[in-house]
Image 1: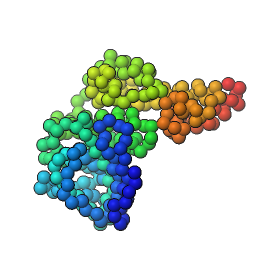
Image 2: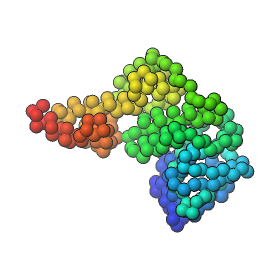
Image 3: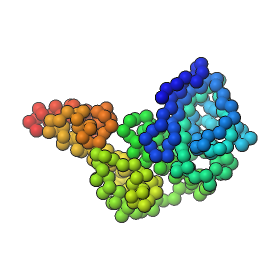
Image 4: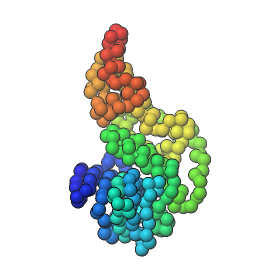
Amino acid sequence: MPSQATSGASVSAWRPRVPGVVEVFHARFTEYAYPMHVHDAWTLLIVDDGAVRYDLDRHEHGTPDDTVSLLPPHVPHNGAPATAGGFRKRVLYLDTSRLGDDLIGAAVDRPDLRDPLLRRRVGQVHAALVRPGDELEAESRLALVGERLREHLRSRGAARSPRRDPVLARRLRELLDERVVDGLTLEEAGTLLSAHPAHLVRAFSGAYGIAPHQYLTSRRVGRARRLLLEGQSPGGVAVATGFYDQAHLTRHFRKLVGVTPGRYRATGAGAGA
């Protein structure tokens, strides 16, 4: 939902189909300064260009490009460019299903986290969120982001080795196999399997060497290959195999097979398949 805030500014915001994400907000500001305000959601912020200076709970903070900033709900803060060219930022607003109110105090004390892995993972969530149809990937990556944020806020130090849970991994694989076309969210899977979404991702990846969203996508591409060789059109195959649209199918098909669905179908037809 694009909008314009002021001269020299560009903004886009939307509500994705990912549980726990209230809003995605991408913006570039050159001069605009936020007054003191509050949110009723957690603000997870990365700055891709420039820097932001802000006050939180009467203490000054900043956001160099290698930092992840986590501003807690209900705590007043402001924001202004800290560099002459302004700043470009990406923000996720998360509800308390992702991070609980018990972590607010720790976030007030240390809102800026220098963690290259966390920074990269937050960027991966945003990359998935801008691609329609990749909501399960975004949710999977966000589960790991939430886990790492909780580790920081609870001062647990380095991340612990994931606990192996092959039975849970197998149950999730069976559930994904049942839902290849319809799909499911990690939140739904967690409810059905009585497990936290982050633990589901860890258990599955540890057992099979692939994340749940990658497994589901590969199963869908496998079905698409068979239907294409039967002569069905890429558009019809996209619908029949659970992809958001033909472009979504093409992106993942080309990544996994090396050619577009149309070329793959033509090759099969030419070989008399």
